[in-house]
Amino acid sequence: MRRMLAALAASFAVLPAAAQSLAYTPTAQEVKQARANAARDAKLADAMEKARLKEEAKPVAAWIPKEEKPREEKTAKLRQPEVFTAAVPGPKPEKKAKK
Image 1 (cartoon, rainbow, N blue to C red):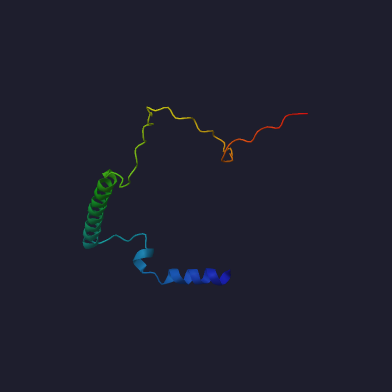
Image 2 (tube, rainbow, N blue to C red):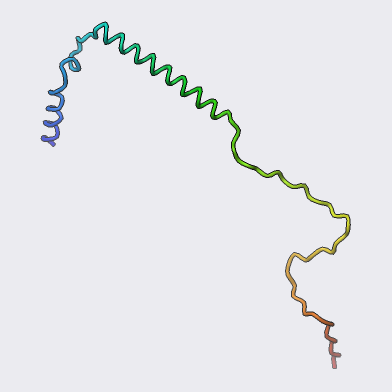
């Protein structure tokens, strides 16, 4: 732990003096450059926001099928049972008489 703290303290020692001084005041050229950078960034952010809003305004490129209306058939069909029932082809066998 002590080694980590020592390494951290050593890394701060190599920072430029301007970054450590509280009394540092930027020069006029640095102020001008910072304001130009801020204006450039604001203009870029505004353009990106407009492009995002334009893209979001576009409709979704997906095909959604419309619901089909139920067809009313004119001919009456026999209603099929919901459960499958097996049937043997041919005539029905005759029932045997009870004794």
